[in-house]
Image (tube, rainbow, N blue to C red):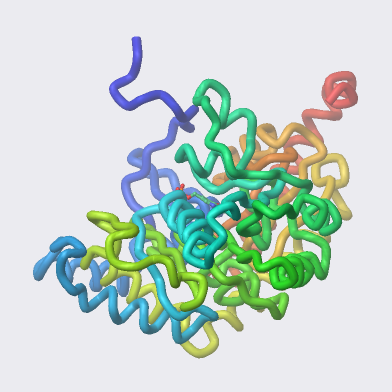
Length: 402
Ligand SMILES: *Cc1c(COP(=O)(O)O)cnc(C)c1O
């Protein structure tokens, strides 16, 4: 019999009653170190008192009015985000996929109002993840997510990630834009080769294309800069953001330069909830903390320490850890055993991590994680490695087969 909640997730049988920073407490009192953080969402940890105060204060005043009226919190957040980034303007959404929908529409519309309605195709990359709407599954191109939901939305041309020559060869007179994650998250924490984003930027400039970055997972401090593209020295024309931007309150955004947004005039796009006062109160509070002097320096320091410990673990546990990936606190371990085994062993040690493609587990702690907590995490990973090694030693045939 079907469950009352549509069974599209194979859920882990854990129920949490509350969270405290990087820790989750189950209804039966067990504590877990949470390096899932709601899939890179809870950037300031669970039950952050500053965010809770911002949300409760707004909740006593005004929840929702719609975009038929001015929303001071949205104007304030947009002014601050555009001041802190390449962007001149932004549209608020409720999720990452909606932020991508806005980005895709904006890129096509830009070409349309520039006199190039034929330029409506977008180059995307293998292993990409852009969401689960009809347009974003077409953009992501993952056959698993497309199967049975046809007809596939046309307009996307996919090439291998990190392959600049393939991207160049895919440009036609119908290309409008290139859409890429600076670091692929769901795709397996894949950091592209140095120069890849700069090469795409140049390719766009040479061909009148827009560069659209999907920073839904890599943004809001996750890699140690406010946005991951800041490490590369280039800026996009359009950028989608979500996950961390609301610290756990559902929200997203599409940011753009004035030029890229020139087609998005009154009536061209909308959202009932997007930028609602509750979300904006939390979004402004998240930004207060992330933009504080020293916040990102601390993220980089803790990330560096964690990466150092992980490198030691890779060297001492090659039977479990095949490879380390990532940047800042968007980290991955490519497992030498089936990744679900490592995820389960970590759970037995009291630590929660999500998986990713390419047999990778992700390490996505809240950005407020302390040096002590990454040390605890490293100890738990080591204990999980030992647990698996003991199992392999007890059953070498099975171990070899895997
Ligand atoms: C999670 C994610 C999305 C989709 O966000 P939703 O809020 O689930 O719609 C899009 N792009 C990237 C890179 C993501 O990691």
